[in-house]
Length: 309
Image (cartoon, rainbow, N blue to C red; front, side, top):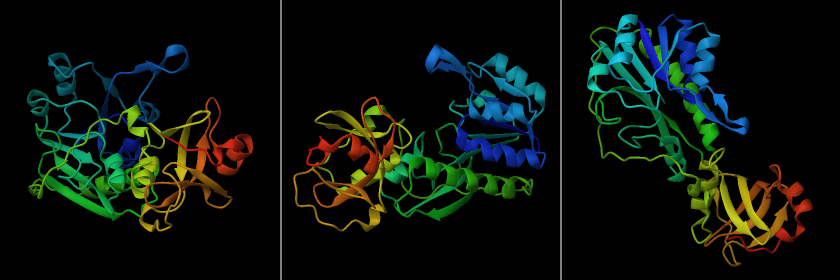
């Protein structure tokens, strides 16, 4: 097996490393470099950086049309494996490969599309998983090669869940592709499909009339991006981290929704929602660095008693 690994995001780096260790990666396909940040600098994808570090050839195309297909065809890869690549493969491109697989961080057919781990946290799921599927023309609709399920405890941030998925996906890929026979079997996805969209900055806006569980999940799902935020009497503040598990909330709130009730030095800022309290233990004030709740209150004492909106 000689794999063209098509990927872009950090979540796929560990899979690239582990498959390369056993000699299955022949080349890497990633999206074109972007410009951004201070000075409008060129930003290379995490996959490109790691592939070059490993001495692997890297290919980047604005589109996967005839010129790209000609170059990729010349490589002689028999297998396409994608994981957080960011582009749709057309039928002509897919026809270049004998085997075509995609790694997707959900229990398909749940959460097809670009933001499955975000959706799992926001929806307060108690389990998630990793699927390896055959690539089909409709997004994430292909038949399943293998799935692995794992539990969620209601405390995971987006970055933590992505890190867990990265580890599981790498292990699952090595186990699958190091022993894949020519007569491998595929099964249809079972159940009703659901779909995700790209996360937007406004997804971080907190509505304190929602339940404590929903807000707890939102804060976690939005970290490290787009970050959950609310308006205070002294400007917009970012709520970066929340204490405990969303599944364990039971302390009934008595104050108006959004009221910052007190500081608990162990748990963080105690904030009322429509049903229970949440405790926010890391925050960021306007034009300041992120800090723990105690440090935040020391610099913004009027936050106690404030009503966040």
